[in-house]
Length: 413
Ligand code: DI6
Ligand code: FE
Image (cartoon, rainbow, N blue to C red; front, side):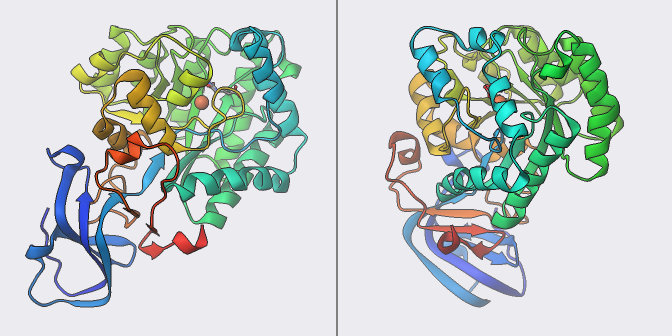
């Protein structure tokens, strides 16, 4: 932990309490700490009293006793889409289920129609305030999925919009191809033909354009079967792309074991996950991404198997699942509160879920998610008394400073 880097530092953040999310302490906490940055990296972490007697540093920042945390990672979002589904919300309030609406041609299909009709610029304009809201709460790394285009051209538009947002906001982003999200109208009755189209045409073309960082699918009775998803994963593997899966959200299709068998990064949702799926994930080191926003918004009552995930030491991440149908919620802080209130996660588990384990869910564990020497200097200064306050309080919480890659960003968000 206390690594003394010889030479010069660009910045020293001192008089802070650190939540490093390393080691055995709750939150990896280190009180009265300091962190030094060189360029976009963390160069020194330790107690203020262990600072070298002499050092050369361009800028010193007094944290005034606030808490310094790693930048937050929202590892599962559908941030790019057009339109909204407020009408469907009203139908669900009147008694229709998410599955019934989907089977009747609403749901994801209605967002697909709106997204196909939008230009890249319109998609960027619609997503900009969503990304700004997440980042204002401390998100410095994000995953953004395609999956509302469902054709080569429309999926490309979504991924181009995500890329444009990444570059405009200077955020770390994993762009995930989710062609296997729903069956588009032109393939009704021919799901296998659509999977062929994805595997033979769409994914290879978009990967060749450098627009895809990972591959996802929706394994569910209202979406695609494990066999169909397996073919998508084989196509991903041939292109050297990591995989992840929407699994066991509405029923147990054994998708988690499938994604684990491909050394998948994560299995996501997981309310209906069983013991075999947990064992497979534990063996493969596949992260469990829990999505309390969708659980809450769909009024799900079956809880993900938290106790067994803990017991098998599966890393647990939390994400917003920000999307127009099952989680129109653009707040990662709210996810902390929901996971604690609805499922009994501890604040420390919840916060690890959007830092260390959120990074792991994206394969970014070597790069961010903790405060450690060598990690990217994505850091948040919070005016709080204890990290638990971030899970406890809803609303009126903002970082007082945000550094992304060592650069102070609060002013620009
Ligand atoms: N599961 C979800 O919760 C989102 N996608 C998925 O596969 C919902 C997407 C939507 O309803 O628009
Ligand atoms: Fe999702």
